[in-house]
Image 1: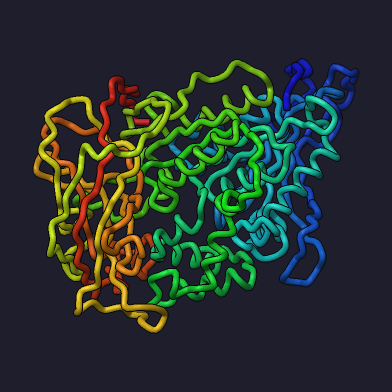
Image 2 (image 1 turned 60 degrees about the vertical axis):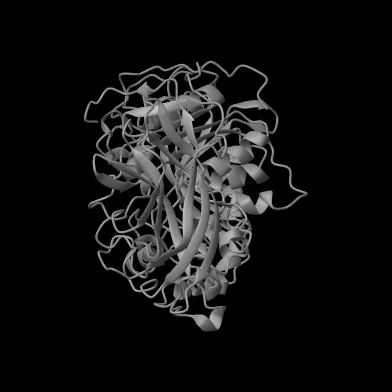
Length: 585
């Protein structure tokens, strides 16, 4: 790791240079010397050969397309750190023309969160970094960058394919660029990107010791927990994900991905057992697969984990799992949350409204990305950061050192003979009002918040009249969908849009029931609130229509379950609130 100071980086601007992000051209008559920028293309498109096979053609290797951006003020003989970036699912790399025409980082606050993260690439160039943005295999196929993107079919972030591709990108850079090094074989390299472009980062760091620092945004630790928590398919997202790449973007999928998409898009599939091809695919493609191997030792890596508390695809629980695993490996690891991410549940009555912004109190998570890499790769002054910052809303956050499990001091009881029906206890017309609500006594203290992971011990059974559309794939099963609710000023809302499914066939729901973790949340409580547990028998996230559809869905319409037991809520005292002044940005 780093043990020396970087070479001094000079920032000279010569009057013979034109443009801010040009293909660098020295005007005729300009005198050149060693202190002037090198005469070479600072922005160029490249093709990198990955040793992982192209399983769509049978070739033993795969061509990966990428865009290279050398520092804006590139001086001969002066080394620089490298940032490797990749795109979200269904997207493509940032190409030269896109960077030249993109919104400046300083004016990007009105963009969506994902675009704001990508907008930082220009700031990295200006700050003395080289940047490589690459197409994941199977993507960039629409020709929007003037080429056919990367070869092969997507495996959804496989260690044997996508991670081998990413290692090839790093190797090309090390062999062809003047990357700043601490010692021979130890280049200074950071990784960044959102969602799908966030997932490759910890997996690559697990395999490649050349990676110093990462900044994964709104991504996953365990893809199975994200796509099929407790064995229930998050179909609205799965259908949208498959529709996007197959029907809209022209991306190329591997055979196993095509089969998985076929299964999850069937009208009647609703449990992971109904789509068996997907199970290994989901589990293998994430850092959790490395963690499950007792022989694996995660190398330390400095990680800035940026997660959305209201992200319904990769929720706060995934960021917490990623934080815990990487933190235990010994790197400098921070978890900073915000109110943005993958949104898309109903925004009507009982919801918390549209997805929020990328702030954790006063911390601007977008600007923080470059500050993080400036510290880790350039030894510049570090940003002032807590170990964990949890956003409570767009303007308020708490800084803590750890997230504790619930103590049992705030226990919600679900009485016997409680029955929920998909036809009535659902979120079709309201995000919360139709669910059954089991509250604690009214909040009387002003400094409480519900922060962390509720723990349930629930006995769940399928009622005799329960209807399972796929009984041949397993036993007749029912489910409940459990979230944290707050009644405030006579209105009910589902906290952070999060629900956790629990199947009647889950071995932990027998007698006596075993602990089951619910989805993590972070919400400030107000005096007069009634906080408790919401139980649904049908919820949009798990229905057979895309996430952006207004359809009601039919997967869980005939679901009837009985439930009893208890849920412990992680309600804690917060002494200090970090507040960001409301600015409208």
